[in-house]
Length: 120
Image (cartoon, rainbow, N blue to C red; front, side):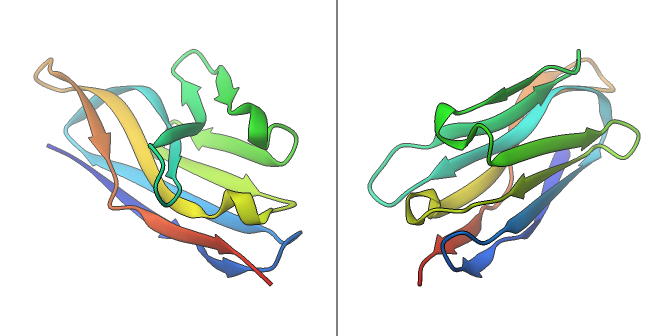
């Protein structure tokens, strides 16, 4: 069993910053990928940023240069630093992890979601 616990989010004015954190726990042997997806009202859930086990990081084109994803392998955590926020960044942000458990099971896991609202 793998659990993802998110923190951060909230209401911020355009141009402001927010920080989202996610910690994975449970019977984790290896995290293959971990990051964040966003789901705006009426839209599908989309990749925001993800870091893979080899250290590579992928960002959605819309957030490149504004968002930074960092990971701590020892603590099984990721942090998404969001700067220069725009109203179109408003969404529910979900932490995501693809893991290999101690008993050899691959699986994808989601956090409960945290609301980010960018508005004046």
